[in-house]
Length: 165
Image (cartoon, rainbow, N blue to C red; front, side):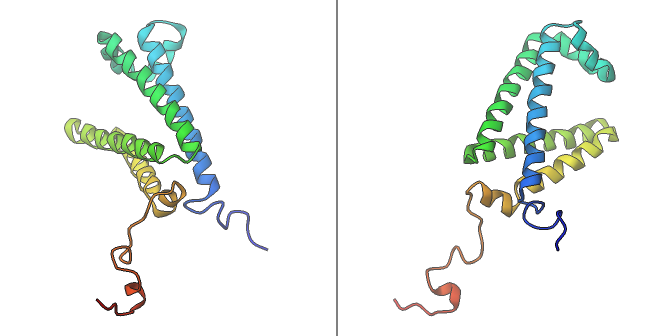
């Protein structure tokens, strides 16, 4: 009898890691939507979520329209990505990979420029998510070709058969 954790459901391209990532995308969309609401309508009861990062909140309020609009657009893009991700659309894989990569690079740059290591754990987690999303099983799940050494060979050459010209 095998353990319920073993097998394809828990593997790198399995159902459970994908479901956890679905939840991650949904939460990201909701959080960016909440960010848009709190920046566009400041000092509402929802603004209490910024108590952890009050300095950043006041900086965003200086450019309220741009920041709030950016959060709103991000929320819509993430919500659209969730739909495409669940339907296994290639564009959703590319979009999500790009968003994750940009977020990873910005986190690394923030650490390098400010010398504040408080975001290092977030960068590590983001890096692990990027590695997972770009892994071969996940790419195959979304119908993306994976490049192997045999892809570039003509038919028959992969088996050591010499082709005549």
